[in-house]
Length: 116
Image 1: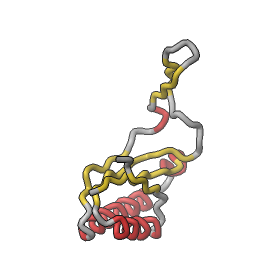
Image 2: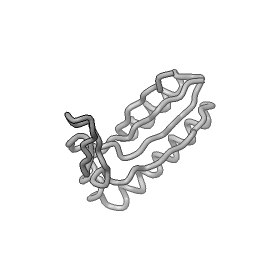
Image 3: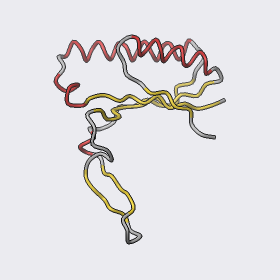
Image 4: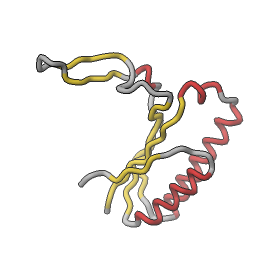
């Protein structure tokens, strides 16, 4: 059984400005995706939105063997990872098909297999 991370990148500022009807449409798409996962025999380990990237703390090594800590995301980009699904599956082909159906409904996702 392999584990996969489904990353949800999105333009945070644009998402915050969308009308409630678009947020509801997005939530229905997520419910349908979760139903697709269960129907395909995939195990949903966890799913969660993330707090806004402005609330992130980035840490990287400095030149003196310590850590440089800054407020905000690691990269400056219009799109940030806003949520994720952790899925366990024996059928990568079916999982990929479920992800493609999810994306076809207007979702931008990135599917990554966890290294074993």
